[in-house]
Image 1: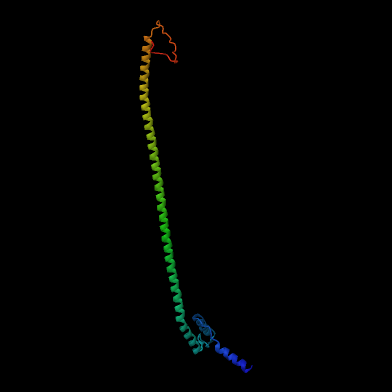
Image 2: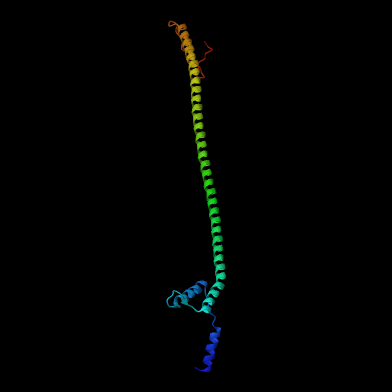
Length: 190
């Protein structure tokens, strides 16, 4: 390996920044460290590297507040989202209830209007029938009165004719008059 390659490798190692490790991953490393540690003879205890274990635990404790802040922020966002969703749902329910109420009122108004209109039509038809019956009765009374007058007139005419027929005697001859020059009978001549 040349000096140039070695230098590039050193530069690359210096530029390497490890990705942040989460608390969960650090705790899993602690578990693995304890799990893979050598057991003490005749005991359930294990031998672990104290510095390595404490470093992992310190890193976990340092990362814990960041993750807790992130979790709290997520919980707060969730609560705000749920509160907004509940407000939206309440508003939608309120508008739906108002719309339903308005529709019920409009339907009731239409029903009442139809009932009122039908009542007015029924009254108008009843009044029309009553007026028609009254008109027919009035006309019938006038015709009956006219019939009485006409009957009396006919009786008077008949009496007059009967009187005229009694005055005319069959022996007397009635001279038939000749028409005058203008084509009319001269009634004054007799």
